[in-house]
Image (cartoon, rainbow, N blue to C red):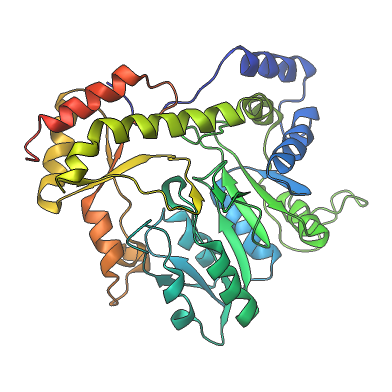
Length: 364
């Protein structure tokens, strides 16, 4: 079976894990944690990195540190992984959904302003499947209405908007290092910011809100969102490969484009987009097919030992977040979208085989 994703792990990661193991610091203390935080922040040109237990924890930590609370509203795209909306609910706030842009699938910046009310406090743009959002327009709206920006960059390590790396635009950005992400620590996440006070608040809340100068004194309700030294050891080694991992993702995308472009020219499928102002990292290389053919194609590829995944369900149709409003672009993308194998260990021969199997399906 060719998997949808597979981590790229080697001798460097193993050496660091052994070093962390031998040090005796295997929990949330140890030299690799601060190294990983500092190194990842530098990679994206920010001052502070706050490592934590996972991407969802990163979002929750950012929202709480910005003071999001009961009665507040936070704008999120409806087409994304459910953790984005759940994190807002964790703060007793309300996620307000916005539809997608049909050209590049992220939140439609032209529809954000209509969703803003007197209770709106923040916008969470999600760089879906590795493609950047239109950050200039979003930042302009946020500035006009005095709103926080929390970038959900869980799927977009190394992506760029107009030459600037994603994760460096908002008040805070949030990353996931789950096993299928471009940079992985197995589980894990990180918040990045240039705001010293915000960083201090996130460090504080991450460790049960225990004061650093008064052990076991907890002045507010905090969380156990710490990353382990073992996880950070993997992350430090992964960052040495950061640029090469991103470029391999883009190479895989080029291979798919070469092998499937004839199907796009015949309007049988639509390939993963990349806008002129974007550097997409194709966390998942994704295609759109006609709705009535989508599931059959996935079953066909499964029979050929090729794993695929459907697009996320829009959050407004999920039971915990269900609304009566319609978001037609997100609904259509969800019905038509397929994530193809995208792991960095894929070869050109693998991609040719996958494309050949797609062409042999009943799409035509």
